[in-house]
Image (cartoon, rainbow, N blue to C red; front, side, top):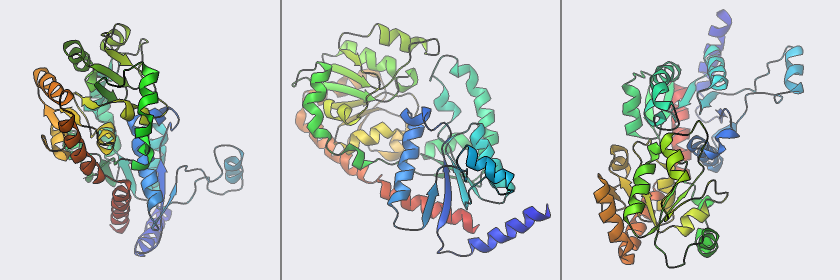
Length: 375
């Protein structure tokens, strides 16, 4: 106990040095499997944002001083700590590895930041059985998030969800941001991307990007396609095995003639090049990175009218928000038949996406890290 108190006092002295470089353990458990997820994309955005900072933050992504194998074991045998020194831990997932990092930070007096990418609300409808497990997940999330000195989340809407659990730790919303550099040159891919999909150059293409889940509005997307004479393409991976929901199996196996499910796309720029109108009838969302990416590409976006989207966007200015399928149909028809309206909406959307640059994300993260260290 005395050792821990001495460590806390030493840390307090370090925190008083405002201009020192903050060493951040920026941890993502299951990094490989999560690469194709929103969590993986958001984490990559944070890391790129921190790299863009000229100074103030030194980032490491693994807690182990010698890697996971021989060097770590040798350090333990030699009586040295296997954990690389850091000032603040930032966990982006909720599994056992993240719990271990959290416990280490707490036991050694280091501040813990947890990013709430997962909520019970957006867990529902993700795969078969998710609705049954959601209440149990909510209790676990309440326990895990409440260990943090600071909880970060993508939106005020997510913050309200967390406060209702209740999560009593301080909560700060911070945008996931959009990586403009990763989208550069997408325009040149329009013809080859459409040729790959068998789309006519003059077709109006309504599209979505991301994992194919019922929660993301899959059934609405397909019913809209059945009612409208345009091509509909969903760019993103999907499961058809026993873990997939009934809706995903139904629509991907027996899709309407004008609907294409591409599966995983290696170059996401192909999606934004091939599509004309981004349609996202999701039922719940923490923010929606693909929406910002579509906006950054100057695409008109049509969204379900949710509080989280009203938080960031303005209906009729940089997007269109629809409350019913009838409104979606009317809006898509209007945009499909009016290229000038699509262009105007897309230009405003591009301006909005600029407000979510990674430079701003990096500056905000540095500000939040500094604030936690100074408490």
